[in-house]
Length: 122
Ligand code: FES
Image (cartoon, rainbow, N blue to C red; front, side, top):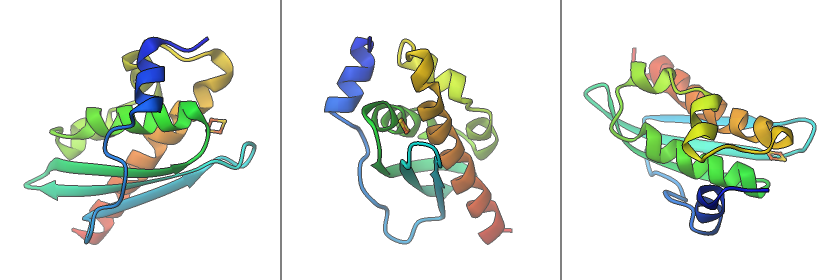
């Protein structure tokens, strides 16, 4: 049911944790499953230099959080805003249809963190 990449990121999630004094924080939840994801950003010169996450959620939510952190590091704010849930799911070699909402959570949390960064760094 799950790709090897999903299983890898689920069993070995990258960039788990918190960033002290982050430049942006985003938190989203899914009302239907109750899962919550929080993303912390460090930004230097408009480039995302570090991302960490904390996810209270299902295996797919953990795998997509892990993948989104890897995809966002090194991107400019504008490039990271273009990262879609579809792109995250594709990078994991796909997700079962009933688990696509988990990848929404990851992309949304990243976008919320960027919004927070922009609001606090005008
Ligand atoms: Fe809720 Fe996956 S079931 S994020």
